[in-house]
Image (cartoon, rainbow, N blue to C red):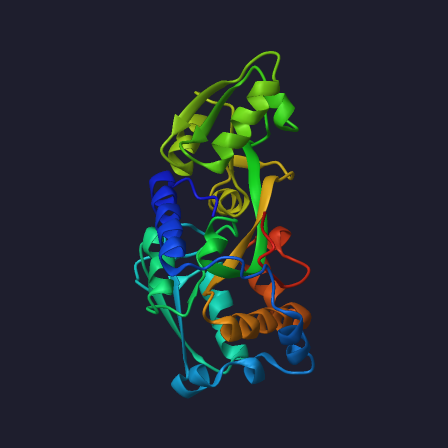
Length: 294
């Protein structure tokens, strides 16, 4: 994931590495084997689903709220909503299962998956090489950071190079801070970079005029601009990477069924409808893939 919750991300990665070492899982391949791909041909997602899941009739999915519009609570309630909950429900329906959706701490998602507490994790999680040491990913979303300015873009910023010499606010520990710092290294006239705790506090610096631009994950940027008419989002995404639905490496059959279910939703238009509902259709993937991250 590209969330600017740096301490949570670091803790999650440390636990992933520990799990991978303890279980001795390595060299398991980056995609479904040829035999499993052949087996999937001509079969529906529900037909591919292992018997143990059909017998239980429930798909247990975990997410971590606090990252709108991907996963959040409906205002004034504890009902989970957003892109990931909606897509989880659609996948469960393709598998002919009842969805059991749980909110959990982000740094506990992969350990919970490995312990069997959850069947899947859907929580804006970047498909990274380090995480793939412990889990497999069905990639469903591809996104990066976008530049946000005040409405009207008074500084006329068009790209990262236009940030040179300007005051920019970036979230601590985020991939977007890395994007800004990489660009700053190329600038003849350096940026003046301040670091905020998260995206909302960074936007306060735009409001007050202490910064002229920030870089925020695309879906989050779209949510802020939808809720407020005070900002403008530039179209180009930087540092794009796939986000994936995580499944335990010991559950290859479930992974393949979810892969098929996602492809069915892409083919019938249901997938794009969900993303467009939340205003993030620009991050749609053309086809479902497995372990397609760098």
